[in-house]
Structures are given as structure tokens and as C-alpha cells.
Amino acid sequence: CWHQLANKWRQMAPCPEHLIEGMMCDVCKRQPTAKRLRMEACAARAVRDLRQSVAQEGLPADERARTEAELSRAELVLAELQKHRAHTPFFKVVARAGRSGSGAEYVSVFDGQTSYILGQRCPDKDSGGGCFVHVSLEDAERSVESFPRSSCAYGWPRAILAVRGEGSWRLRHGKVLFEAVTPLGELSCCPDEVLRTSWR
Image: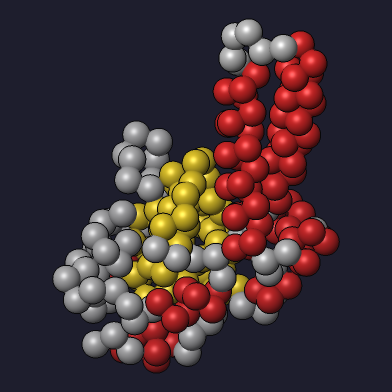
């Protein structure tokens, strides 16, 4: 996925080690992001269920040993998938914040207030709410026009950011809801005229 972005950066946060790791990862090249997320969710459920089994009182010694061995393998798989997710880019459609007066360059299309600053985690840990992102650049480009007219920044110019997912996550409505994201850079994707006017 990083290779598809090589010529699309408009501006980038100072995190070259993150970009380099993702670009060199053979696993991430072979396995689509959505598939890896589904695998991670399955592995997380397996780990949770196995931990509950190990915690049961009165479990026969041989069965406990087998369950503990299976748990150890499942934890290794989960840790590996989490490692790859950490250097996987996700994609967020945002509004350009020239009209917000917030000082941030990008804000949420939906509320017109939540700020997105390159290289900084958003939202902060105390604000809650989370952040919806897309698993592919193509999905993000298709969603540029999909915001409801009631969105606070509906008529503002839009941009697409590559972001890193932070904290817990879950799949919802064909997107990923992360606890928070860290914007990595703005992408040059749709023609500027489309990003400015296609939703008006």
C-alpha cells in the first residue's frame, strides 16, 4: 500500500522510520489491509476465549497444558498481526480548516471542530469518540462526496490524509473505528476541482 502512495504525498509528518518499515514489509505487500484486520479480529477472539479456558478451575492438567500451548501460539499470531497494522496506512477524509479559526490545517468534515495535525495523535486520550478511517485510498476517494449535508464543514474544501491507527479498533459500516489516529501526510489524489466542488 505504501508503494501506491509514493508519488501522492503533498506534505508529510516527520516519521520516516514508520514509512520505511511499511514500504519494506513483504507481508503487507501480499495481504490486503482488510484481510489482515479480519485475521487480527479472529486472533483476538481466540486469545480471549483461550485465556478464559485457562482460567477455569478444575481443568485437567493435560487439557490445561494443551490449552496453554494453543494460547501461546495464538498470542504470537496476534502480536505479529498487530505489528503489521502499526505500519499500515489508513485514510481519512477531512476538511481544510481555513474557515474554522482553530489554527489547525485540517478538521473533521462532520463536526467542523476536531483538529487533525500532521504527526500529532487525535483525538487526545481524554476526549473519547474515536475516529473513522478507510482501509484503502480508493475507498477514501469514493467517500469524498458521501457526507450528509448536515455536516458542519459540508461546503468546505476537502483533503485526504494518510493516518496511523492508534489504540483499540473495530470494524463498523465498512470502515475502521480507531480510538485515535496520527495523521502522517496529505495525499494528492482526486483532482483539486473534485475535492473543492463535487459535493456542492
